[in-house]
Length: 184
Image 1 (cartoon, helix red, strand yellow):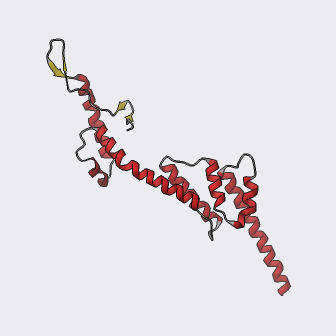
Image 2 (cartoon, one colour):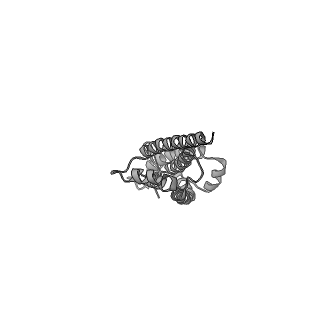
Image 3 (cartoon, one colour):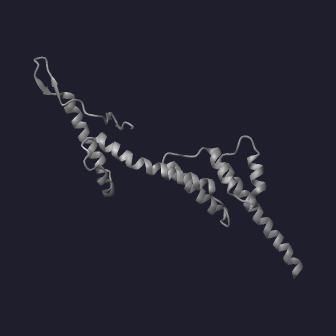
C-alpha cells in the first residue's frame, strides 16, 4: 500500500496511545495526540472530497490510513481494468469510413483517457498504433512516415496525415473534374 502524504502530513498507523514516563506512570503519548490531530484533519479532507456513492466504502474505517487503504483496494482494480480496456481499444482502433479528423479525435480520446489514469502511451506507441489503424488507403503514407528515423512524434505524424489527406482529396477532385470534361 502507498503512503498518503499531504504537505508535511504523512498518513500512517497511530503511535501507542499511552506511554510510561520517568516516574513509571502511564500518560497519554504526546505523539499520539499530534497524530490524532493530523488524522482528524486528513479524514475530514478525504471524506469531504468524496461522492455520496463512495462514502459507503469507508464505513467502519477509524483512521485516515484505513480510509486510504480501503479506497485504494476498491478503486485500484477498476483502474487496472480500465487500463486494460483502453489499451485494447488503442490496439484495435480502425479508421474505417471515418474522416481523418474523426479518427484523430477518437484516437486522442483514448490516449487522453490513458493519461487521465496515469498510464500515458509513449510517443512511439502512439504513432505505431495510430498508423496501424489507418487502413489500406494510407499504406504509402504510413510506409514513408514510419520509414523515417527517428519516428516522427504523434503531432508530426498527424500533421503529415492531414496534409497528405488534403492533397489526396484535391487530386480526387481534379480527377473527377477532368472526367466530367469528357462527358460534356
